[in-house]
Image (cartoon, rainbow, N blue to C red; front, side):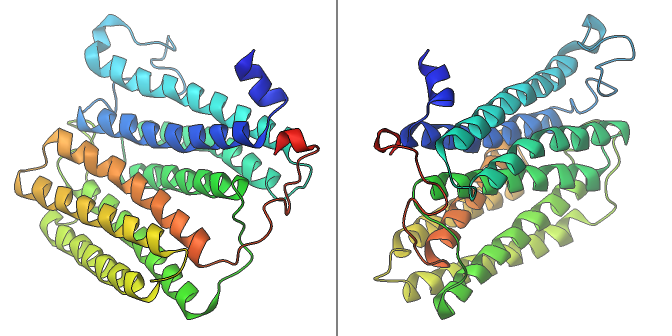
Length: 304
């Protein structure tokens, strides 16, 4: 009854909890999708939407790879359930319409992402499609973070001054680094299946290109730390810098140790964490605060 009430008669606390669930679920599916690739289980279910031509579930001949791939597909249904519950909770809690389109977009993004996942299987794990699949997941993490922060009272109404422009630049460079990381992955050894194609780029060269973008991101974030001292954004930008340094350390170690699965998985989750933290910084620093009930007015005091 408690879960049902959090959806059908939600308070702000309930909606915040569902927004958190959306952030976590979208991050977890990035990890499970990464494990599919890292264990060479990308074609464990060789077709889509069925696992095989005859069955929606894997059979014994597909072995552990089939179980891993099918498990990742099942988690998509959990993500759908979280997205729908979040959408209903937001819709019932908010009389204003500012939050509703975002919740709808996040809910619609899950089946769209599942279709892209199906295309990756049907194209024999084409690395460019796999890259798109990951970037879309990162977009859902960012959107879920925006929803969480807006429910808690932050709302975007436009960039503010030079400091806001600096934060926008940090955020843009963060996305460049994340995308270049997918390009490196597409050139490397973890293809998702022994017969899957690679993108044909030199992994060493593109690892250095990716590293250069990370160095630039860290340097720009340090500048932001200096210029944002004394502002509400100082805490978020320091947290982002610490996360960048930790992610960079993992990246260097995994490069020097020939990409062990555990470190690659940690690096993948770290990318999602960076996107969430960068989105938080953007919303706090590059926008003006507005009243917490603007565009999301609870119908009674009990829902605040």
